[in-house]
Length: 308
View 1 (cartoon, helix red, strand yellow):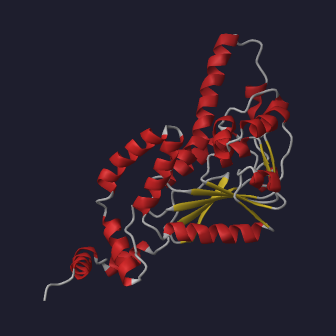
View 2: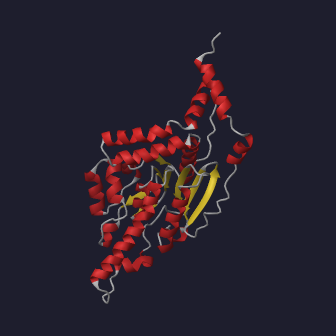
View 3: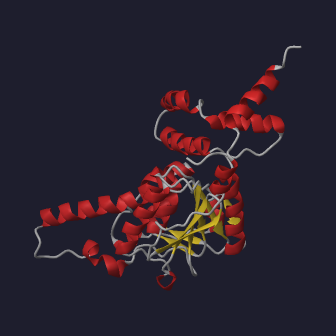
């Protein structure tokens, strides 16, 4: 009697995709996090394949000093290539998510030295701002999804930071402010570029950016800037962890491909995005993760995917 196509497929998958028990055991071990020793950030691995990156200057309400920019970029550039991380939860220690720029530590950007030629000063500032922009671009360029969890104040550079993230949750006591215009400058690290695309309302973003008024969680959710509001920080982190664990259980090839192509399509026409998707899946549909997912679905089992 001829074997059914389904039976042949299952036997093929079992033969070719059976995981080595020692690999499975090894993949479930927590990483040493030896590459994540920072002064302004605390990095932990609360569960398998999920990292928590916490802004760690609580005594300064996590204000962003000079060292922060270097460490944040280094952190996310490392995470981008770390096979032990599939999802990131971004949080802030202490009473606030972040108070934004540590002004006292960046006086050279706000106060011009009269003895320095204005042209040369402009070139130096241009270089500095371009370097700072790379900090939050490292979130977007990291193929691992990043969930921002905001409590208390999220001001200035904090809006730039969370705008680069893939999902934004907040507590009911959170508040937000695009503060830069009160300092005599235009926000220059991503808010004016990312935020209109996130919420789809230029009118609302322009009002916030031009007045520097605070906005609260209900308004942020109404316009789609945050997707969920929680009663307190503990509840928020717990739910973010649940979502992160769910994502981490999926194929890392599929998850990272989804983020990359969502970002790619956001900045192109639908046709251009679809054309890019064709090229992407020309190779990615050949991944073993596709067969593993199909076999697990048929056998009503949970698939276990190799590190990427």
